[in-house]
Length: 546
Ligand SMILES: Nc1nc2c(ncn2[C@@H]2O[C@H](COP(=O)(O)OP(=O)(O)OP(=O)(O)O)[C@@H](O)[C@H]2O)c(=O)[nH]1
Ligand SMILES: [Mg+2]
Image (tube, rainbow, N blue to C red; front, side, top):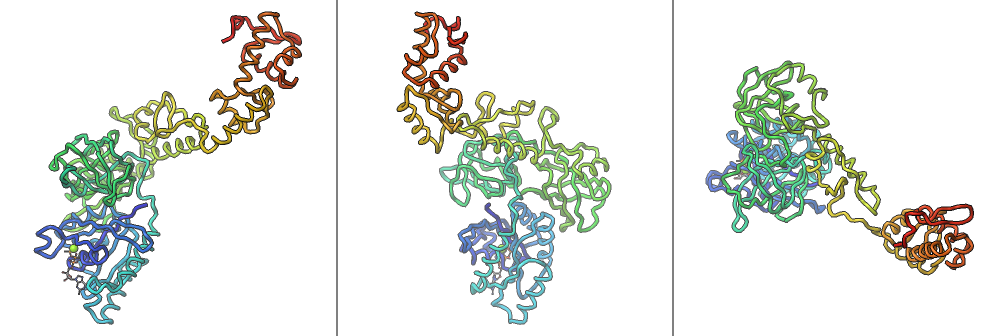
């Protein structure tokens, strides 16, 4: 599971220098950032850990005017790196960033008390102590970007924090959903967007829809950490090449979603987390994904609200968001991303308990609605059955519920007729082809005698493959020997009218048991029928056998 670390901390406290010391990359690349010596926009760098793991690092600005960019960066991270200046200690944006991380549910991380080179031992100890109190249950490391002191300890602490992150933050099963954080053009490639994939997977050739504009785009290629990959998975930071799209047609805050995903909506029902009281009718900025949208808060009973958005957003139940006025005043967890306009408190209570929430598909305005969890369950169930499917025909019957057509195209299975297969799956003996070849050789050797086959599944496969014919009692005979036996029987019956067991045994040159089993199989195949001790041809095959 690839993890993303986001910095946090007050302006000038040393985030960007620390990122540069850790990764070798200066993320302050805008001319204005260089001139003013502050970060304005998000910066990105890969961070290699001692154990070979690679984390994605996002550097955020500390200036209070750019908290909006900080939140856009922080919505896609798994771990925080809170940076505190050893001389200054915690300052306003140290606290605000911490509150934002908390509202976004980002619990794990490391605190770096930096610029340790610039203070005496006693000041450093006080700063470390303050940091431990500020962020309990989190490792605090003293570092200096200037001298490099403490950097190895910091990397080790980040590795330990990464170990603690549950990898269930993102849902691989849902429809693809990515929030754009950068758009740029590369010569020879065209427009490229980057962002964190919140759910689903994305691969070259996929068609996605830009929300809220509704424009369809085709993904030419996918990169993770500057390396081309076939499919990116939920939780990864990805770069998508989008040929034929103008740079200006996309911007930070846009969402790229699977074609069948719900459209962006103007309302969100949320469960509120208030840092300070949020009155009914309050006008705030809703930070969700990489966008910030003005909204009016319509309170609906205790702890709930409907957010009426000035611009539509793509969201899903369970998403976290941050509410800001002049500063961060609270946040919310999405209960319903496509609610009715009526903010009925009872509906919120039901939604909170999950009762009124759509789980299995329901048709709303011509579109199937269902929960990500439901889709994940469906996929897991099909995956499990496919894993157990007969290698001879490694498919499973596709669900044929009314939603099947729309829903199944969200899943990476191949449909052939009424069945689903893993892409490219073909009937095979797989690792057992050597066993199959050995059995065929054994049957050819034994011909015209039958052979007892212990592996019924192998026998069934080879029979369907036309290599052998199964007889009773676990015996099998080569397909060629069965064909000859059949010809003998048909020929004899046509000339003599009937055939007895002893006569057949003599003609076929096999033992009595095999002769008996062969005749029974011919009966079962409708070639002959038994009358007393003899066989007669069934009328419908009395014409020359084919
Ligand atoms: N002595 C010393 N100075 C440092 C160290 N790290 C950063 N500084 C100083 O602090 C200034 C600000 O550092 P940055 O890394 O740009 O701070 P920032 O947290 O990224 O600032 P914003 O992104 O604007 O919030 C630098 O220009 C350096 O002068 C350090 O380890 N030791
Ligand atoms: Mg900076």
